[in-house]
Length: 133
Image (cartoon, rainbow, N blue to C red):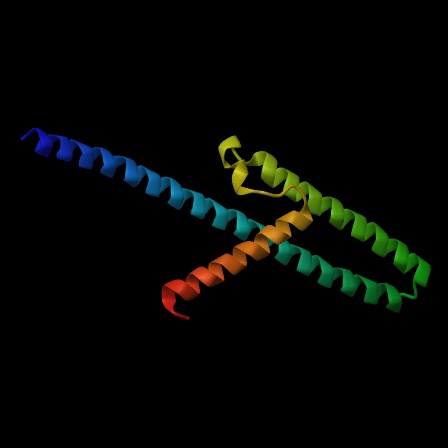
């Protein structure tokens, strides 16, 4: 009888803590996906900015700006974009709660893009395993 009670208590204990463990793992994976989607959104913004920069360059050529003037504008735009990238990553990392900062193993734009690529590869592999793609 004692073993039955101990077994029951052990089962309840294991059930409660295993469900908590699964909740934490699920939350961790969810947060990683959210961070990856935020980075993906930033990449899309940069693609749009690149398109607009190209349009701007074409309009400057039509307006007969010199090559030197166009190059100076492009350098300024590139510096602004680089500063924006760095500030976005800094804001993302610093705004995260301290316990979740390990979910963001990056401190600059290059590391963030590497994280995004690895995240995309992992999700593709997981989908293939789960859905036999």
